[in-house]
Length: 97
Image 1: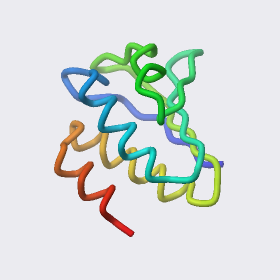
Image 2: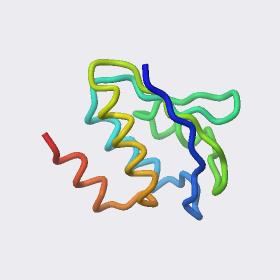
Image 3: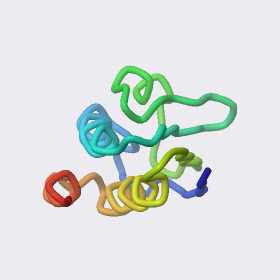
């Protein structure tokens, strides 16, 4: 299991567009990927789950990955969030082998 706590700096937090890109990236991996805010957890492969967390700019989240490609999954999710949910970065990640 891998985990990392980080602050969401995107002015929109995890908006519907950001959640859609996060689901797209997370779905590339076999590992379980969870996003945790306070006491709530959501599967990063579920847009509705992510939206239910209501992550705003400045919120602290924890990303938890577990499975055969957990390190790569964690790195990819962090990269996407740090890019302010860039569609270009999401496309780059999903096209990597």
